[in-house]
Length: 377
Image (cartoon, rainbow, N blue to C red; front, top):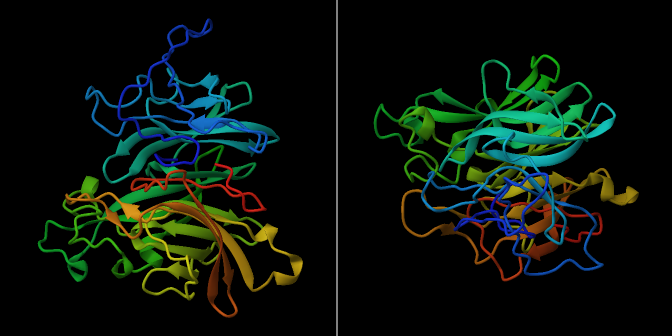
């Protein structure tokens, strides 16, 4: 859910206004999609879910005229918008299944810019766009926008960014004022009561010393207050193997992907970073990634057991919060599909999909891959 996706750029540098008037919503000034590569018969069927917003302060002349959730056809025709009763800031707009029906889930809340995480809740709408319920963090914590998955008919799992005070001198703190660090958490809550059923903490299981964005660099928060808490981990995605209760975690600040046991909370393996369990095959290397997903079900039966397939969006770039040019490890961003061998501890690039024109995305990104490894958005 971010500025760089293969169908549309979500980062606006000028106001986007409508050139159409809708009889049912004459108040709308919906964004107009600039479709540079039209859909063809080879394009996967589906709709475009879109949450345009500004990353700049209000009234600066940047961003959409009306931010909010939108649904478009692949020809750019507006199907639905939640402008006016969702948001004003909305993200992570998805279709999911809940209690026998398809529903829409939308994060609503505020954004800690430039740290890149949110404070809010997720709203669930039924198939007639009516609000069913709002899911909030438990234990007086606010949900983050990066991930929200309905686990079954009675629970939901989502990211939480929890700033805490800690001794950061082992990690390069220069004064006592640098004492705030972000504990990246996953909460599973009961969708009827918001009671916390399970919680995982990055600080309990992963040493901040392995980060790629040190406290001294200033590129992941200065640590001087809760809004600038050191973002050593930056969990921007997770996926769940429900049958085996295993989690795939993307730690952007560590340029690492972890697999975690949902029963014990312990790390099973890590890909990338200074302590990678896998050797990296040609083209597998990545950094500042997003949108990690598991694809175990697409493996041939005879290879199951020691082989796993994952996909992710390799940004290979990060905005330079300390000033100067963006950080980057290569000249382009790409969606990647990778096979992991957990017996020989090797990794192999199966497919790579670069954005048209070789875009480099420093802020966010997403990538979805079908079983035949074609890029679908």
